[in-house]
Amino acid sequence: MDATTAVAATDTAIRTDGLGIRFRRNRGGRRTFKDLLAGRRRRTRPGEFWALRNVSIHVRPGEAIGVIGRNGQGKSTLLKLVAGVMIADEGTVQVTGGVAPLIEITGGFVDDLTVRDNVYLTAGLHGMTGTQIDAKFDEIIEFADIGDFLDTPYKHLSSGMKVRIAFAVISQLEEPIMLVDEVLAVGDKAFREKCYKRIDELLAGGRTLFFVSHNERDLRRFCTRGLYLDKGALVLDGPIDDVLDRYNSDHGTAK
Amino acid sequence: MSTVSVAYGDAHPLQRTPWARYRHALWLLTTRDLKVRYSTSALGYLWSVLDPLVMAGIYWFVFTQVFQRPVGTEPYIVFLLSALLPWMWFNGAVSDSTRAFLKDAKLVRSTKIPRTIWVNRIVLSKGIEFLLAIPVLALFAIVFRAEVGWELVYFPLAILLQTILTAGVALIVAPLVVFFRDLERAVKLVLRFLFYASPIIYGVSNLPSELHIWAAFNPLTGIFGLYRAGFFPDELDWFNVAISVAMSVALLTIGLLVFRGSLRQVLKEI
Image 1 (cartoon, rainbow over the protein chains, first blue to last red):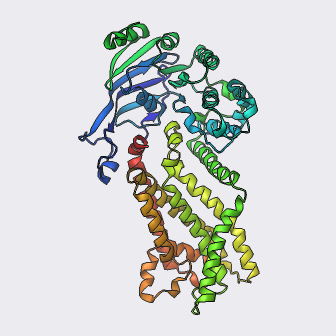
Image 2 (cartoon, one colour):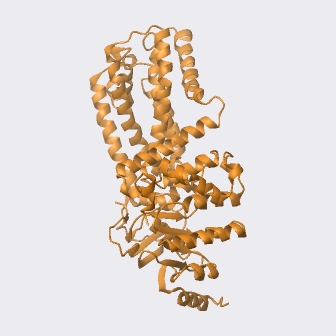
Image 3 (cartoon, one colour):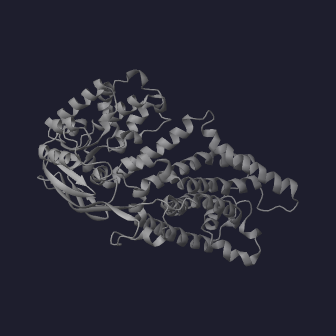
C-alpha cells in the first residue's frame, strides 16, 4: 500500500525506480469524486504537471548526496517522497532503515505546549519511546542551548530558538538516513557552526545524508555526489564538483 | 549504526511490531489533544461535563416544566443524559474530524506515522472525555433513584459499537473536507439535524409507529437503546441494534476504503 518499504538489502540506503509525482497547477480547479479515489493508473489530465518524473537513483549507505536545482524543480518533493510523507504516482521508493527528516522541522511543534512536552511529542512521533527520550533529553536541551525556557510555551520562543530545538531533536534520532532541506539557512552563525559539526559527526558515524541547498560552499563541504534536477527530471548524477559546474554553466552563475 | 539504541533497553522503531508503533503514536497524539485542551483552560475537566449538563438542564426544563405532555421516561434527566453524553462524543468527534488534516497540516506533512491515526486520535480523545463524564450520569442516576437492571452490561457493547460507527464516519469526512471545504459547514448542519432525528430528547416509542422503521436505519438509534437498556429496559430493541451493527460495520468499511483511496491526493493537497 505504501510506496516506501523497508528492505533488508545492505548495499542500498535509498533506491528509487522511475519515480514520478504530479500536482494540479491551479488549486481551485474542479475535481470529481472519481479522480479523488482513482489510483495511480489515472492518466494525466489537463492542468496537471509532473513535479518529478522518471527519477531513478541508487544510494549506498554512508554516501552524502547534494540535490541541486533552481526553485520549483522538484528538490523538496524528492526529499518528501524519500521521507515517505508523500506518496508517488509512479515508480517506487525503497528505504533501508529509518529516516530522520529535517524537513519543515518546526512544523511538528505545538504552540500551546511547553518546550519539554514538545520534545517528547516530536521525538515520540518519530518513533522514540519515553525511556529513549529520557536518556537523550539533556543532550537535546544542551545542544539547543535553551535551558531556561524548558517550561515556556513553544509559541513564546523566538524563531531562531524554535529551529534550534527542532534541529536538536531530529538530529538525535538514531536513524541511518538523514534528510536536510535548507534548514540551516536560519539560526545565527554560532548555531550554524554547531549544526555543521553535528552533521560532520553523523557522517563520520556512517549515516547517509540527503542534502538540499542553494549554498555551494555547504554542498561542497558535505557532499561527495550530486543530483541535478531540472523541470522534474534528473539531468545529471555524478561527483558534486561536476554537477555544480554543470549547474553554474546552465544558469550563468559562475563564481 | 543502530546498535547504539539497544543500549537504552528499547528496540529501534523498525524492530517493534507495526501495531506497537501504531498504538505508541496514537496514544501520544491523543494525550497531546487532552493536554492542550485542559492546560489552556482554568476549568479543564469541568468543561466536558458542563456542556452536556447545561443542555440536559434546558431540555429537562422544556419538556417537563413547560410542556405538559412529557416525552421519554422518568426520571427524565437520567433518560436525557444517558443518550446526550454519548451524543456529545459522536458530535464532537465528527465535527472535529472535519479539521483532522487541516489543523495539523504541518505535522501531517512532516511525519510518516500511519495516517488513520490523525482521525482515530480524535475519536479516542473524545471517547475518553465521554468516559470521564460517565460518573455524572451515575450521580444523577443515584440522586434521582433510577432503577438499574442487569441490562447495564450492554453499556460496554454500546461503547464498542459507537467507536466503530464514529471512526467510520470520521474516516469518510476527514479526507473529503480537504477537497471540498464546504463539507465542513454541511457536516455541522447534518449533525444538528441528526441531533433531533435521533432518540435523545425522546425515545423511539414516542415516535409515530410508521416512523419506527426509519428511525431504525439511524445507527445511533440502536446504540442509544443499548446505553439506556440498564435504566430503561423498554428502550432496548434488538431489531434496531442489529441494523445499527450492520450500518456501523458498513460505514467503517466504506470509511477505510475512502480513506485509503484518497490518501495520496490528501497528502498533496494539504
